[in-house]
Image 1 (tube, one colour):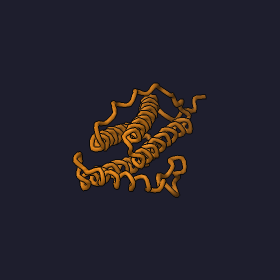
Image 2 (cartoon, helix red, strand yellow):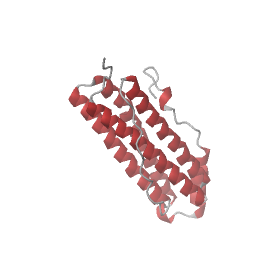
Image 3 (cartoon, rainbow, N blue to C red):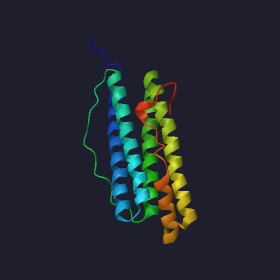
Image 4 (cartoon, rainbow, N blue to C red):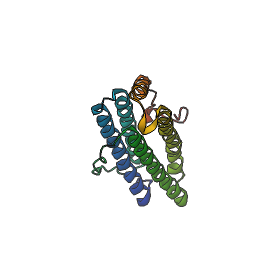
Length: 184
């Protein structure tokens, strides 16, 4: 008896998202290593925390696939892009990556709607909300950097930004802890 409640297309697109989340984790990890090598320990810590969040997102998608009777597949991930030139470049590339991930989530939502797979449609709504938060977070980083002077920020301003980000609490909620009563 076939117990898979996911269509082939839905299972494929969800497995593609597993890979995208793994790649996102690698990008944040790579940029964190770059930031640390540039002396930005606080920013590195911030990026490392977000790498873990992306891994949690990957696990959330994998768990959903398996709960619906599908088969989660682990594919190879692309190497992270080249190191950023500076913090402005780092945050801009991070924002571009988050927008790309948002668009991938929208593809899942659209396909689930098209197929009337309301379970997957509902599941994907958590990610829609999460991506709003992710994009906002990176936009706030870009705003802070702009106030500090952008690409021409003084060393003192960059030290202040680095210190501020390093002191932020680990407020990133874990995806695996989200449920209908506490979706965050």
